[in-house]
Image: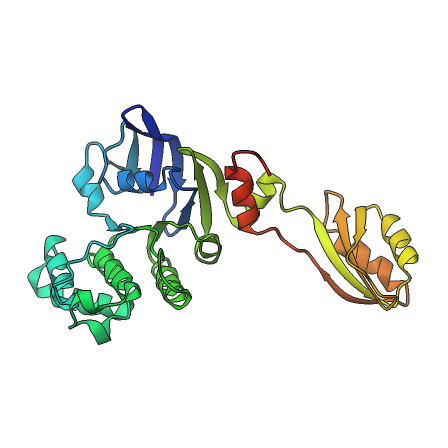
Length: 315
């Protein structure tokens, strides 16, 4: 649906975006992550046609942003980091005004405004001035204006910036609901938000894409999510348990966690690459009279992957 080819943007001698290539399929929710100054907002502005690229092209449904910019813009709803609102207008009047700008037929405008008010939870404030709203409600109004013309693509720049935890959850639910029928591209600094909301994560650093995939795939690509298991075993002798686990081909290394009592052992098991090691470990422990209380695979967070990829010196 969206094909980005060699996208580059210079501001004087500064290269803000450096030859980005990316394809986004219909119906994906894609999160754009990166440190401050990485080029996220510039990339989104070029995607929306707000800023022309210095080099490269963006093709949306076969339409080039360079030659068919207006046609591409008609396919896109855009919410900048600072929602473009008129504080003195009533919410209803503002959305009606946007509907007219977006070319919605006069007889369909009221219905479109009512539908978006319902989707974004604005029914109770629809006749209040925008200036009277909280930041969370203003973000909802911004989302409503971006979706009024029923665009195929929704682009959101830091949609939860400055919101409290309850407001973040509300906006997240709206984005997830929107994502069932539209392609959504959003930038965010909240890594947990990207994990909870996005199907795919693209990390940008110094204007270049340095990683692309789900949070699990990013961990696999960097080697930060290793095949490690955490075991809790009751009634096992420490030395006997270590000897048994170390004898298994699927185990490379073990580590006793903390000060374990004689009754309970907590062990980190680093496993060899290959098939799932859990069946072999379970079968070996089953032959003893020990009790396996827990066996799970801890995963490194997206924050660890992000810091590793974007740090000046690798962690």
